[in-house]
Image (cartoon, rainbow, N blue to C red):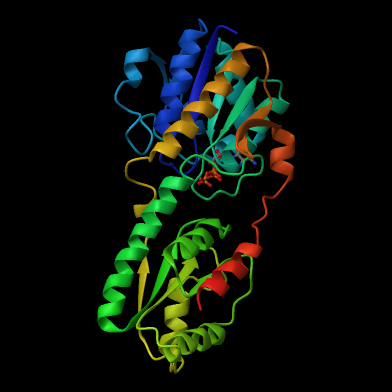
Length: 323
Ligand code: ATP
């Protein structure tokens, strides 16, 4: 393998830059030419290729986001789009591709691999919904941002005897919500994996009030049956004798920005280096992830055929600790 491309795709996640830096420098170390492809699969189809040197990735390990840019590209998911992408890669004599991204991005990587193109995926999404890794790039930083926000909201909630509904990201996966609820000491957590009755939340808040709590936190996943806005609407239109004044806060994209923590920098560096080494050694068609504390590879067809499940015992733990 002589020339490889690297792209970031889907939602950005803190640590993507560390992954780009690692892929570029590992590739150069293995004697390969490395091209960065701007704006994910959209940039592939738009032929936004940039030759990368070791200096081009200087000073980025500490930066959130992605210097290559990311995008969502529905055209790539069509047979015509894929065929065009393959033609472009062949015309430009790209021998392999490192795809840094989440579920959708790895589905795209698998589609290219099925057409015979050498691809290796790197698990990167703050949602932590990707099969083939226990934790993906960006999760730890996003979690820390959510927990810091919860800590801050607790302070003001306590001053005013309020309950806050805090909405965190995660698409259809409750991982970020559940983990930030446990780490932030929330009273209630609402996740997509479990049906919710808003009346139960009111009952739990009232019970917290009766147990002598001066404030309460309800962490809500954006993809839950009721998100924070939905719950707030419900509470506005139904009497809610919870004992607390209610406020809602949506953390939104705040969770994606910011400086990647040491964990994400190291994870990104190790996963992307492994992905590049695999391509250099002629191995591909896999996702590089982190399983039981080790770097691990999983075939892309297995990755996309399986849904990652959430450990619901942790929901019981969150409930117990909310006493
Ligand atoms: P995140 O969940 O963190 O936002 P993601 O990688 O899951 O990241 P998506 O928006 O789901 O983000 O997907 C990114 C891109 O992957 C899509 O815009 C599209 O170009 C490509 N993609 C998604 N699904 C497919 C598919 N079935 N076939 C080919 N390409 C796909």
